[in-house]
Amino acid sequence: MNAPTSFRPAGPLPAAPLAPYTGAWNAKLAAHLLRRAGFGGSPADVARLAALSMNDAVDSLIHFPAVDLPAQPTLPDDRNELQGGDATQAGRERRMAARRAANIAMSTWWLQRMLKTPAPLQEKMTLFWHGHFTTAEGAKGVLAQDVVNQNTLYRTNALGNIRDLTQAVSRDPAMLKYLDNARSQKAHPNENYARELMELFTLGIGNYTEQDVRESARAFTGWTVRRPFRGGGFFEYAAQHDDGQKTFLGRTGNLDGNDIVSIIFEQPAASKWFARKLLSYFVYDDPEPELIDAVAAALVKNDFETAPVLSMLLRSNVFYSARTYRALVKSPVEFVVGSYQLYGIDTVDLPTLGVLNRMGQTLFHPPSVKGWDGGIAWLNSQTVLTRENFASTLMASQQMMSAQSWLSAGVPANARAAVDKLVGTILYGDASEAGMAQVQAYLDGTGTSALGTFSPENFEERMRGGAYLTMAMPAYQLS
Image 1 (tube, helix red, strand yellow):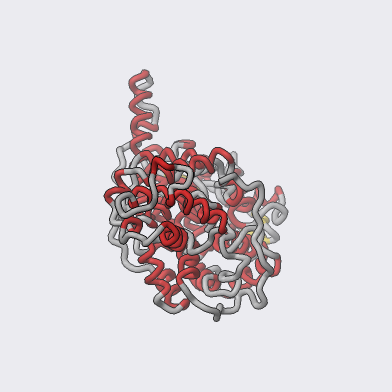
Image 2 (spheres, helix red, strand yellow):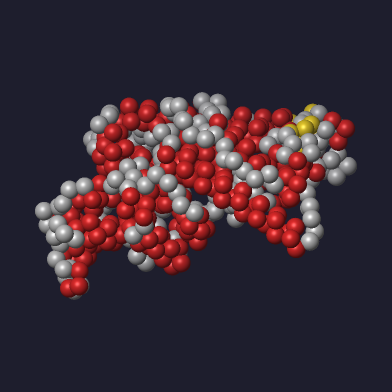
């Protein structure tokens, strides 16, 4: 597959885009719902949703069931190491080893949760918040345990109140360190968090002034972390808080961080900011202004509660429209986790972490405070090749051989029947005739006499090769 240079959704904005969808409900749309509100799932997961009504299917995702998975990973204790510790070469190597071990532990833990959770939307929203309120492990003394605790905060508030989550993030030790507020004192207010809170997290450029940044920074002074290099929690250091009068976004008073967040969420720009973010993540990129305004109004009406607004989106005309279908590029995490789920592989192996890194997405290490660009930026000649190599390696892996997969269940009558099974299960029919002909030629042994014709004796190997070719098609890169 060649990397596309641009991508735009097809089809017009439907009439009454946020009105409840009342059209046909089938496995194809159930798979679409599960890709967007999860990572794709298995054919059995899709069939289970397809057997429900659309409303019941959405309810099953919005209302999280109990999850019997490890709440947090077991991490090596990196607190002493990040304080500096032994300055010798051996000490530096121990610090590097401790960080590597922590990163492996927490990344595999989260990927396993995504893979096996009965609440896929909870993990999808945790990933959403991780890319929105970004923090990177290791930067500015941010401990592995700090970002794991932050990850738990996002999971706990996955579909909760956005204003409340923003208040909690403002006190989060990982964030306080990452954006330097832990060192902000009344004599020298640090403006980093105050600026990014408005620019990237809640309002966007053009909806505040430089004076607002300065006044906000004063309000956040004294919000710090107790014993920051020992994993301490939030601490409000009253002696270092500026308790003077401040004027922020037109409001004057002895404002603190709580007041700043509350005032931000009174601004019309805040509801539009989060409406655009939710639409770009769950519906399609560059949503129309009228669609943003409608979702923003729903956020305000619901006092910034995420659950009712996302529930509305996942039931809407626009969500099931041609404009939305296959209109988002899968992130590397979606691509990998969805592929594991597709074939019933239930354990993430260590090399997968390197694969995700080469695809451009390393969990707990977003590239900057603005997170991952996403969208078409996920696809270039290098990352597309990495996706294809991952699919090829997966098909030949011991994990694949050990999985009880639909791929080896039942021998198709002939190569065409095998193609229909592959394209029907992997892509729900979203393949061109030319693409299907290529897979059939491979299965038939056309031009590859060493493989022989499709037969019961070689069908498992040939089906794995056909699955790889199907995964390399453009539609598989899209959610």
